[in-house]
Image (cartoon, rainbow, N blue to C red; front, side, top):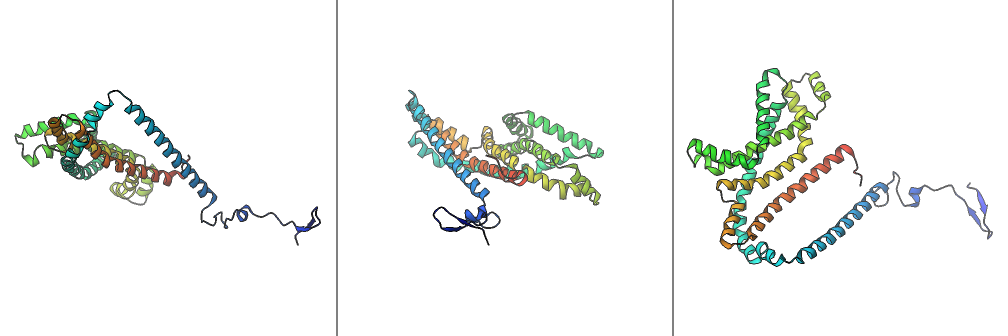
Length: 311
């Protein structure tokens, strides 16, 4: 029997034992409440809502201040007419959108080739066999030289130089083909370093364990090292492909009429810079989803390896 106490008004009250805080708050055993969420989950949800509201409010305030400051500038009407002309925007949107499809096709063709070649180059640079030293040295020279020269210079060197060397503009599609080859050549070097960083990040105990089980070097790389390395480098790879999606426009230097070239043609005819804004918006519409996908993959990898993020 719980002890009986006498209150000041003479009524008997039963002073029961202390009740668990979970029972008072309506939580179920195990820390879960009636909504199926723990206190920690509810706290994180409140923090997330607070962060979203704060970020939204600050963004609205910043945008309002920016619009106010820009619109108060003396030259703003002239800039608006030159870069944000509604009539020119409507007339140029359709032809630039049609030309932008060429950028998308170049990207979709080059991206898989870059992945394959970049992985092969990274494996060549990571090889430890003395017999394959010439391969490793050649891969190292290729990466160092390619990354040391700007992409725009490679576009001119390969796009015009190779065509002049073979004395044919129609070979394998002419300038368009060699523009794609240049993008594959340059970005494979960057991607190979991303893959190599992932391969080098795998602890030596993984290799030692695989070799102790009787796996060869090739089997160790194929079944143990490469799967873990690829999973780790997916977010930075996405960042490289965001850059590739934008650098596809450099192919226009060789003559193909893609979005940037079409915008330049329309600008020469209308003496207005709005077509460039149209082309920029089209590139942004593709790059932003890719960027958000990279952020999502990075956050997912962080949660998998380090637990809850601290705000």
